[in-house]
Image (cartoon, rainbow, N blue to C red; front, side):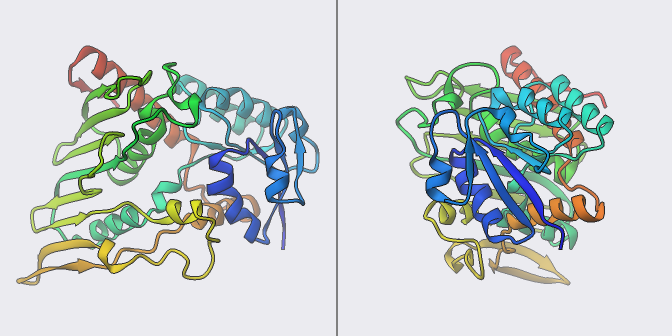
Length: 347
């Protein structure tokens, strides 16, 4: 069995919660070292890790893959350095701040014959996977409207201060919106038009902490939203079709379980029936209104794909080209919000 040797830049919430728990348990991967500017938290959590204090120290001959989990504004420069050093690269979303930066990284990766991917783990949320199943089997007829939202409640600034500095590339669109937009494009492709509204709802917010984004397609409308002022959140998913509806009240449970320190193995993330979505539709002339078990969420699937890409040249599921599309949409989203107008999209 070929083993992939990994270096990680950053050891904040992302590395600790979304990457290391899966990589540590997977014998196909070996995380060798972590870059932290001053601390050595990675070594406290995983004593076998080497901690370095300069990013360039990650780029040694023994490393195959570099995973970048540092703040958004550092992604482009670090990814570029790693690619030029001949390393395969995974970047936490977003790949970069601007689409042009992402296009440059994509070109460099192709020139240096290395893989470049973005960590879009939310494609493997249980809700996203269940929606894909419903669409595949046309259980709701033709889809006419889809809503997905991330709603949280926080009266204080983000503990990760870099996410709310007010600089372009921070804020809720670049934090949670990136996931929602990627999910939508993965399902339906590029919309024909969009309209966006974003605000700072909390008095001390330096960046937008609320947004509503509408994507228009010839046959459907998609509404993506997020806020930090939802003590009582609305349903996570509302999917409406010509034959029926699917409504899921709660978001996937993997993040919450990982934050509690539960290891991702066995039936670790089985979802309670109370969190299943409601399916109300008509199939073969019979009306059905019943909870439907969610597809099992599976963040490990992202790394399963990465391994087969690097060892068997399998197709990459989350590509830089897809990230470029998302960043182009984000730039139009900010333009729409600033101009308060609907923007048509030319492909």
